[in-house]
Image (tube, rainbow, N blue to C red):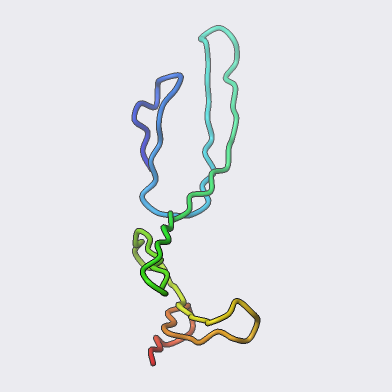
Amino acid sequence: MSFSNSRALATAVSFSAPGLYTLLFSATDGTHGVAYDAVVVAVTVGVSVAREGCDMIVSSQSALAQRYRVEQSVELGPGLWTLLSDQLPGMAEQSP
């Protein structure tokens, strides 16, 4: 995580990995006591979806050590999904 200018009244922050971050801020005017505030930021990986013929192409930025599961279905109902690849924790990678 890095701030573009941590001393500015308005600044930008960037995160290198998805996750839940708690940021603690402090401010002082030199006369009164220091004021503190905290904010929780949820950083997610952006996903884009595009149609290619009868297929949907789902893509996202990769993140180191992120696990995923890919399934396909002709219909969006329960129990109709076919596992294509699985890299979830505790499971060996599977591919048909």
